[in-house]
Amino acid sequence: MIKNKTKDESILTQEDLNPRNIKWRLTMLIDLDVLDEIKKQAKQYGLGYQSLINSTSREVFMRKNKH
Image 1 (cartoon, rainbow, N blue to C red):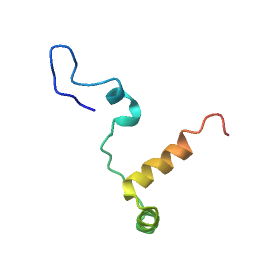
Image 2: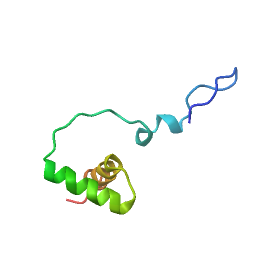
Image 3: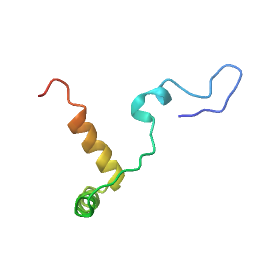
Image 4: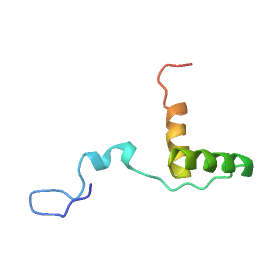
């Protein structure tokens, strides 16, 4: 969380610098039927579709030693 700057504290905390907390704007092309399904499932889970894309991507691509 970004804090108000005082003499004794920085603007950013260590947690702010954790890569999981840094978001990057991305433009991508995706098939419409895939996007429709993502949005449908996101709604079922009570998530935003971008959050579902992020969490699913994390699950698939960040697996350790599972080939």
